[in-house]
Image 1 (spheres, rainbow, N blue to C red):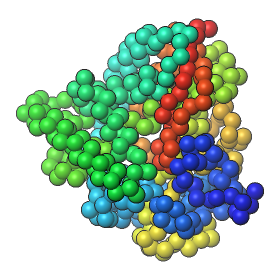
Image 2: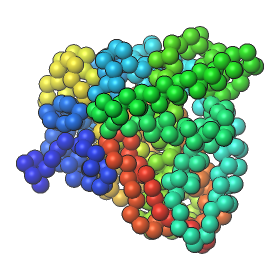
Image 3: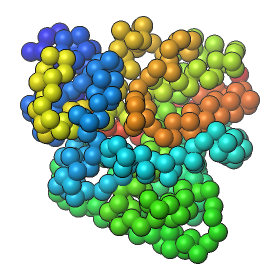
Image 4: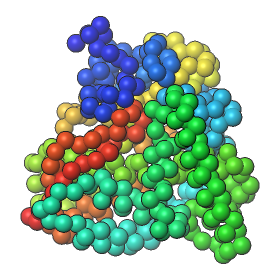
Length: 405
């Protein structure tokens, strides 16, 4: 294939809805690892598609900014003009980023993971015990969304009966296809305002309470986040809700799809529980639940022989880097024994590497262990419905059946 016969606008929603993104990214990696795309529904942008070039960008935050003052961190046009959006620590650079990140980091320490693992295992086991054998159901709704939502509710100490609001808000916040539609964007901003007001009520209720380990209580008692205005509050919540939902949810769905596509790997995993830890890393690489993040050039710079101008939009395609054959041999294959699976870029790289990575890995590992302890095997029973956008990379629905082995 040549550039003339390929549409290299890899932001197109249909590429992901139809699972057709591999070919254009393979061409870009081989021929134009830093590529200027002039025309797209999101405006012009630079695609960065190889592993090492993405690492090079991520290692220069002073040149390639994440700051909300420069733009947003997805390919989309900002929901508001630069400098007036919803700030959060993924949309911050340097000291400002570190200060807010430190507020939530204690929620993801090894000791907290050990504490949370007891609850995660109990909830995963209880849910699996309710699933029917031999009857078709939607894995995304029954398992991936429900387990992820339960964990988010625990992290925030969120009212249990309202917990399904959390994935709803996550889907609304992360749907970049709505940004160019004024009516849809107005509705989106309304839902985010509802989220802010709901959490503000919880915030007000907890101010007088005792110190607690949940994320909202940590934010209340921090000098950094305890006096945020409403835009900052919505920004912080949006990050935590999307981060806590999309990575784990879509990896849990990717687990089922990958094992169904590679029955030899499923047999190996069922025979050897010692493969589980590496399987989690390989799964996250193979699925790459967030396809990209964006940086904004703050000055003219040369990258892989291309001149990027100050103000240009630079899109880091993690989904492509995780298929880079120069790093991952036979990269398309799902391989539980891949010796460098942990080198994946699905959590980003450098200062902005996902703060909740340990928790995402823990949840997926426990799900695999609980499936194995019950000798449950999941079969995909039809074509999945995939998320139709270039930011969140996952599944809307995945029909399955369960059997014992």
